[in-house]
Image (cartoon, rainbow, N blue to C red; front, top):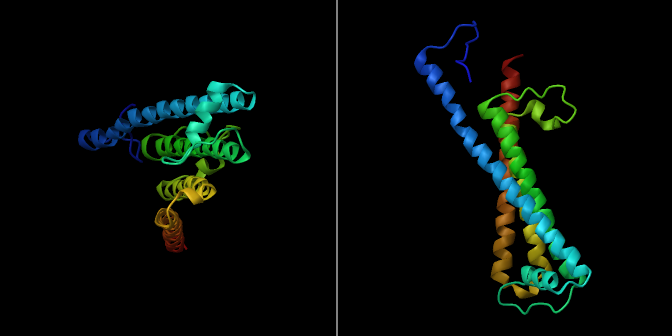
Length: 201
């Protein structure tokens, strides 16, 4: 975190240098998201352990799984069924997708707003990271949020008989808003990219 240089190789004056260095204040935020990622990993393995335990007849694991998938106000199922397993697996997929969202925010956000990671040529460099910017990151985050919303909507539809028509319509409407927002973000990004490219021709 040395004093930044401008395009002429000269050091910036103190005030611009101080303002530019303030971007490192975001570092604790990204480190905090990494800790949140650890919590999600722990939660994933706890749920997976209980699912496997329930499949092998462990009473405590079965009780935990049945309680986790029961909609508030509804009667809890008595045994592990295909629907119950599906709901648990959808919950695990939900955790994975949120974890993917965290990775995009942590890696993409750090690369865009804090400092270059110099991953060029690294075999594990994410394909999207090579051309990441604020617009690309927003589009990918919107897409990830739609995926997460889809999982929650599917879980609701599996137990549709336990929800009121108003609740189903509300959740579907919220999901549609997410879709329209992602389309608007992608369209705006496309217009911006096209306009920027035309100025260079």
